[in-house]
Image (tube, rainbow, N blue to C red):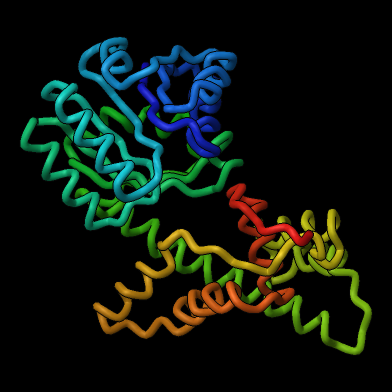
Length: 299
């Protein structure tokens, strides 16, 4: 089995390593020469432009895009439409807006190119081993790519979700839930900080993660971050947002669904850009822990 990977950032490069571990032949492209060099050192073939990447793949081709949502994804798909042939397959594994994925599916269908929108979860660790994937696209073509997900996903860690747009829609809601969960964890530790007791945050996260109702990977990440920096004093409590929480809240409004937890978590992220709190530090640290997202350091 072979695949072309476009985009060698934190997630894309780990996916390449995962694929190579599973004996999938990978040809990779990124604008960064350094990123291509790292992929090559791990066993992937590389190309320095999209045309060369496409030329190296056997027809029918399978190409996975892992670039930022919006214009970068649009530009990549527009270029691929001109380079690929009928019956080739394109996967968008980034965090694209589901309406964009519906549009991309229709666009490529005019050239008889099959498009799948894949919500990718599990952070950098999941991309490297045992990922989680929510897969939208043409049902009749899905069996052709299912063996790929059997190789790189966790057990029961992938789901065919329906037509184009459904994979990224599910990932959008997943991320909205994630916002609420991280916000609750951050608020809890801020209450502990202001309590009359001198709690060891790392020890608290550890005990909560062993047998309690709120045990989770996020709590494990909290323990790791507190063990490294007990009060998270090295970072600012600025909680950046990728946009998916906003999309989820907007969709809830459109559907007249009450989603106060997700919406409030989004508002707290915006507030964190102005006020530094332990709540913000916890969420910023958790995002860094699972996704490698940037944190703002205190000077």
